[in-house]
Image (cartoon, rainbow, N blue to C red):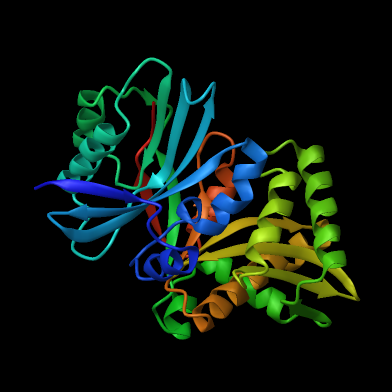
Length: 315
């Protein structure tokens, strides 16, 4: 078994076509994400088609940074590579790494950062260690919702308390859900989100990043921005980004009134149905952890998805 990586051989539309054929994809490997993040971090994207034994096996997006004519060279693969049906085993990943090191040999001044899109396991740790990587931090955990089920099954999959909060929100007079995107509404959301984040001190993407994501995902029709409205005022907002057949819950905001009414439950339920209508087959609810956001983890778990424990950060 041998692997080879062909870099930047596809036009952006051709890359997007192949990306849409992946059975599962994530935000960090999407083309629009690279367009948003690279200017902020002074990086550039590199897009590779992985061949194994002469057949297309997967895709990988690398973000690069360099100085002094690449004397200093950093390569980041976040939640990649991604594989087509029939590929994605540990052996395939091992062959990918071998091909990567042939094209970008280890040397002084070159650094790697890899978060493999693979289930965390001792075997994966051993492989990465054998390749000279050190494990940093804990494995990345998220929750994936399967949206291929019908509406009744999705609703039945919600935990009792979550479904109860949703039913309460649905019964509220004067509460509506709006999926239109205007500059004014998005700016209001960013203001509310930034103020809430500063007041409560939780982590999350910066306003600068959310602005950059909007600039790249809105023109391609791959952003879903929803608001729960009561008496003409937004009481909750949710931002979702589509990539291939998948989507990611990026961030949300809820006012005190929205929290009492279960507005976030209402928005996320409607988001599931909207994404299904768009042909999305899975929804990534975003990272979870027990250390700093136990309540968020409990809320997401109650939506009925499966917890996925992916590889940690290796450098």
